[in-house]
Image: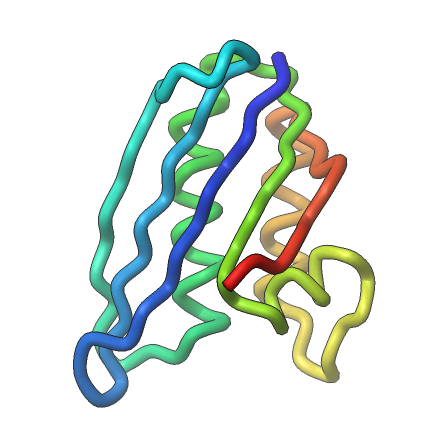
Length: 111
């Protein structure tokens, strides 16, 4: 199944971020929408954790091919292979995707 994920990460208070994640099926119909708040966090943590939460829901549709659009540039860069020195969250994401038969086919930054 092909899934499009639209993710928005916004700071709502110091060290508090809110992620809105919408998963759309091949026809453009929304199959899941999640809004989650992360306290004592940063943008990249929020981006990874909210995508992992969406993947947890999407495992019932496995295997899935994912196109993700995010407003978090460094997250899009990491998904496209430009990793920073601390890649634990990326490793966890890759392991989860392998277990669930998921694959990211496109990761794009959008404001």
